[in-house]
Image 1 (cartoon, chains in turn green, cyan, orange, purple):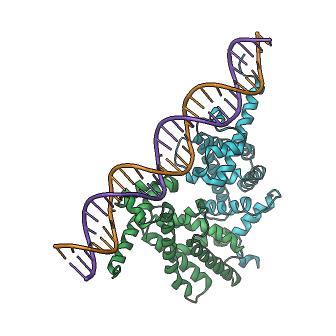
Image 2 (image 1 turned 90 degrees about the vertical axis):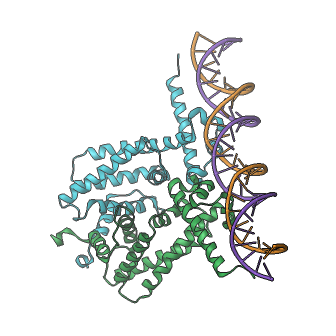
Image 3 (image 1 turned 90 degrees about the horizontal axis):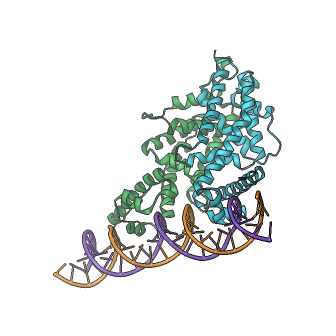
Length: 198
Length: 198
DNA sequence: TTATTATTCGAATTGTTAGTCGAAATTTAA
DNA sequence: TTAAATTTCGACTAACAATTCGAATAATAA
C-alpha cells in the first residue's frame, strides 16, 4: 500500500503552508534577501524539512508562481469562454483578476511584478502569463476593430491600462470588490475628451 | 602641494569607468547577482582597487543612481524654467528625457526601474526623482486646469503616460531622436475618441 | 505489538562573496 | 635622483546562506 489520498492531501497542505511563509518572506526581504532559515521559521517547519518538500529555494519560488498563475488562469477560463462583446469580456476579465487579487492580497502583486527580476526560462508559469496577455491583447484588438474602444494602437492601450489597472487593484486601501462600474470608469477616464463632456 | 587639478580629473575618470562597468554587470546579473569581482573585471581594475575608489558595493550602486539622476535633473532645469504653456513644457520635458536616454542607452532604464528593488532611504538621488515627478504632476494639473489636456485625473494620466513613454523611449530599436511630433502623437493616441476622428 | 515508511530537524558541510591586508608599482615634486 | 604620496592588486579572511547528513520521532499497516 502506498500513500493514501488523505496523506497526499496533507502533504499538499504542508507545501502550501511553506509557500505561504515563503511568500511573506520574499515580499519582505526580496528574492535574494530571503533565507531558507527565515522561510522555515515563517512557515513553522525546520529548515531541513523544506528540502523534504522542495528541491531548492528556486523551486519554492517557482512553485509560488506556478500555483498562482494556474489559479488565475483557471478562474479566468470560464469568463473568457463566454461569447460576448470584446469590451464586456474585457471588463469581466479585469473584474475577475481583481477578485483573485482580493482573495489573496499580496500574492498577485508578487505574481505581476516578480517576473521582471527573473532570468531563467523554462518557467512553466510564463506560459499562463503569455496566454493571459494574448487574450487581453486579442480582446483589445477585436474591440478596437468593432469600434467598442477608441482607435488607439492596442499595444499602447494595453500598456496604459496595465499601469492604471495595477494602480486600481494593488494600490490604496480599497477593501470592497472591484465592480464593472470601476472598470468602466477606468476606461472612460482614459479616453474621454473634455470638450465632449463639458 | 596636494592633488593637482588633473589628478582629480583622472580620478573622476577612473570612477566613471568603474561605474560604467558596474552598470553593465548590474544590468546583466541583477543587483545581487553582480559580484565585485565581475565589476572589477568589467571595468578593467583589480578588485581591491574598486575599494580604493568606493567604500562598498552599495556605494557603487548609489553613485550610479546619484550621478544619473543629477544629470537628468540638470539637463531638465532649463527646460522647466522656460515660461510656456504647461502642455508645451510637458512635451519638452519628455523630449529632453528621451534625449538623455538616447545619449546613454541602458542607464536610464536602469534609473527608472531599479528603485523598485531598493529599500534604504537617505538615498540622495530620491530627491531628484521626487522633484521630477512633482514637476510632471504639476504640469499635468495646470494643463488640465487650463483645458490643454483632457479632464482626466492627473494621477491617472501620469501613470498611463508613464507606461507609454517608457515604451516609446526604452523599447524597440529606435535610433532617431524623439521629437515633439512623437510626444504629441503619444498624447493624441491616448486621448482621441474614434467617433470624432472617423 | 512490531516492522516499515513517512516526516522532522539541528548540526555539519560547502561554496560564495564582500571586504581587508600588505606589499609592490607608479607617479609626483623637490 | 630620490623620498614621499598615490595607485594598483592578488591573496586572504570572515561571514553568511544554500544544501546535505544522519539520527530521531511519528504515523501506518500487518
